[in-house]
Length: 281
Ligand SMILES: Cc1cc2nc3c(=O)[nH]c(=O)nc-3n(C[C@H](O)[C@H](O)[C@H](O)COP(=O)(O)OP(=O)(O)OC[C@H]3O[C@@H](n4cnc5c(N)ncnc54)[C@H](O)[C@@H]3O)c2cc1C
Image (cartoon, rainbow, N blue to C red; front, side, top):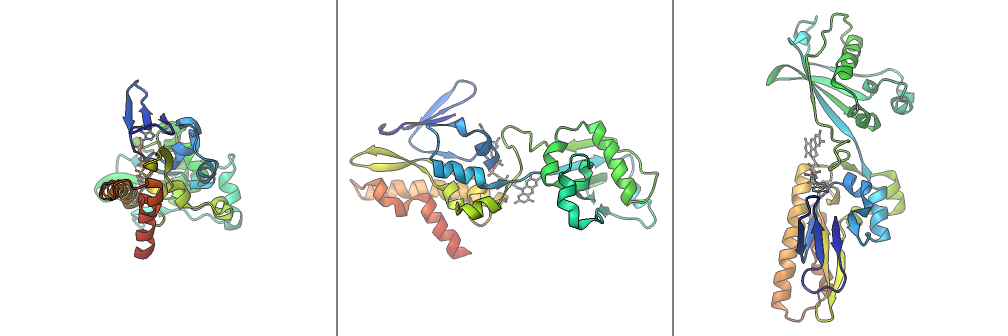
């Protein structure tokens, strides 16, 4: 939990950990996923501003699932003709989105395909995206093995598809520290006019009449990158953005004794980074 107190000199933010440890800081950069932000509004005390909470609620955070299936032998190489994967193209495309969300339809209807992995000869990787990906987290390995055989029999047009011997996967959607996979621009956030900039906006705390307000709680992570959201490099750059921005702010204020942080708003991490990202794009 992250607690911040207005008008507290020097260390306004307290981070309370599950094991009882607490850390006090002048600035904290929060890098948890958008899934965590959505699921745990009570993580922050006092709550985030209404605008910020709406930006979090309306932004999209999707589910993807990658399931590695190990077989006793690479049966796909024995098919006629041999193949290095199966792409699943279903026929009723008009009704596709309605169909895949119907829980009576097997989850594998959302599978994008299965590909052989060159470095692991006996293994196929199955990609799944969309609302049904989260549901697969709750299925047992045994169920997945059976369902995959059913799927492969349809697409390999063969009844002699062997059952996988091992299923390996990460349960991103049910992991309480991730709760999904990565962000996307949702229709809701576009209509509401709430932007990634709103997700990245820090919480400002009034420090004192000399210093004005300081950005006490800052936000980084892929979801706060205006261009490269959903990627690893976007996540890394957003962390640099906030860290470098804080350093620049500290240097600036040191050089301008008596400077009011709140009046240096244009010098803050987020505004800097947005300018950089826009001009680079
Ligand atoms: C299957 C899959 C494939 C992908 N492939 C690619 C790819 O090919 N290329 C690419 O660029 N990107 C890819 N991505 C996306 C990329 O992995 C993410 O965009 C990136 O990892 C996001 O980084 P992040 O630091 O913003 O968030 P995260 O990686 O989610 O890190 C957040 C961290 O915060 C921690 N945390 C959350 N809550 C708490 C808490 N309460 N207390 C303590 N710690 C907490 C979490 O444990 C986690 O370590 C893929 C993602 C998935 C799921």
